[in-house]
Image 1 (tube, helix red, strand yellow):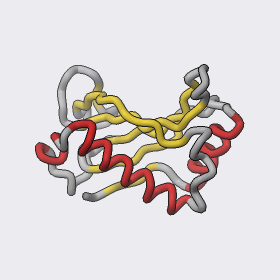
Image 2 (cartoon, one colour):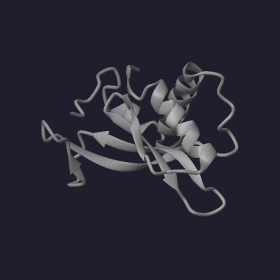
Image 3 (cartoon, one colour):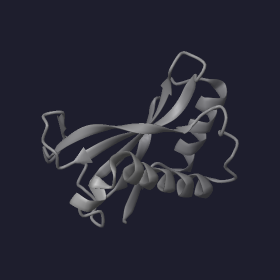
Image 4 (cartoon, helix red, strand yellow):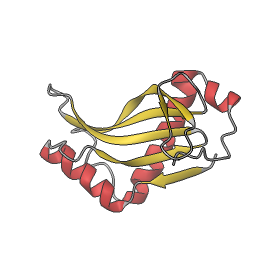
Length: 133
């Protein structure tokens, strides 16, 4: 599967800082694209024992449910949940940005396969990146 990142080491450091300091003021940090899927990486404050975490919210390109359309090409996309990436328990587990990227790519693929029974991999060409512009 081909991936494309709109999330760099500076964004990673902002995510780490946000989780450690429990500050979600800079919420949207970037994306991981896999085929027609976009995982938006956002700091979220759940205002409970979970606190501030980095979430990966899943959006699927090419599905016209009326949820949303890309800003430039007006291509349809839909929302389909997501998962927690960084929290107070694992924020110090990564030795480098590279380690984090490998972890997130594995976690995203696991989510696609396990949570959705591989439906996206079976139905969509995961070797081409959807035009999210």
